[in-house]
Length: 356
Image 1 (tube, rainbow, N blue to C red):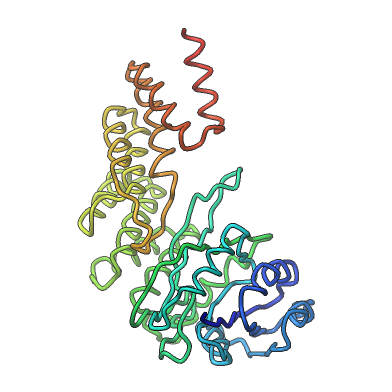
Image 2: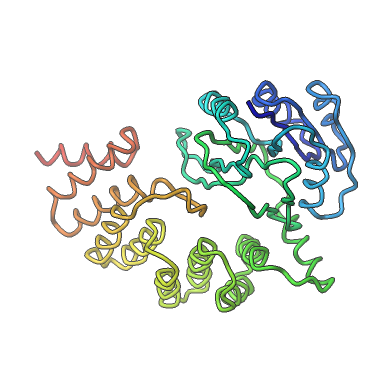
């Protein structure tokens, strides 16, 4: 069985660190905590789980801090978690099974990262991340913000997931500030960092600047396929906020130049036509979303609802407005197969019953 070093970087995480470490402590053989300047009880809490707690002077570079943490690891594989991550009970058995069966020739283990949830706790947003990295295999974190490791060698996709459970807001300006400091110092952002810089600008409602960054990113043609598709969607969001709907539509359609349609994009196109009361066209795109195969291993951001519930519930409305109540009810029941207790499903079911 392989051994694992849990390597974390933390700062002022007293509210969540104990929860994280309790979920992971008995799954790993070693815990390495690198503190980047806490002023609360973070170090005290970390010390309850490990005597390997180190300090690191923060230099506005997440990759530098993570590489330092990994450099202290002594086991076969390094695993990273953020302090507000947890490994749920349902994933613990899969993690233990992975450790028992993992071939030591494997360089990187990818695991699903669940980061968005509905009111019932169902996952609404997820993506695969490099989660276990073979120690001393030459792979390093890159990127001051939204840091990542480029896998080298054999990669496998695991069945366990990590769940991101924030308990409070983080600094909304931190990432953008780091990017802008880099640019002020003359640093040229690589394609991945350029993509995430555009997203930070979008989150800060600086739509014109975000659009410029995304368009440049796409025009240069150096981006990863999944980032290209997401950049097209974010261009559409920017144009929508700038009251340029036709350009938003063209941006969504541009995503098809990079790969087969994603259900997420089809749902956005359905929404575009739905908002303009073009129900036949909206129904076309929502129906197409239901035919798109979901493949999380592609590594892009995934909205599970787009592969089932969302297009079904929207098709219910589309067919109802088109006067096809029988088809509308069928789509509502299909939506119920994904989320049986969803409020829109129950409301629609009551409506259809009232007509009988």
